[in-house]
Length: 78
Image 1: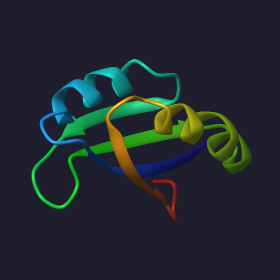
Image 2 (image 1 turned 45 degrees about the horizontal axis):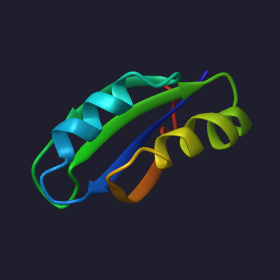
Image 3 (image 1 turned 120 degrees about the horizontal axis):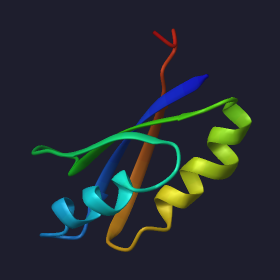
Image 4 (image 1 turned 45 degrees about the vertical axis):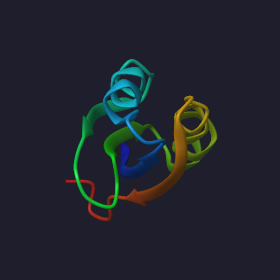
């Protein structure tokens, strides 16, 4: 199992709505809207890094209202 955090910037005022939409996607473990330089923080998972990159990340990036993402794979998997 491979996991990563995805740091997301959204259009102004859309963080809560985007987080709720993202929470329903396959591969999303958790979705929280936060304050600071990023608006939403996701934890995502897949069986392999290739599946994470090919399936989960693109589905996240297609959600309306997202302006930028930064994917941070978890190094130790714990």
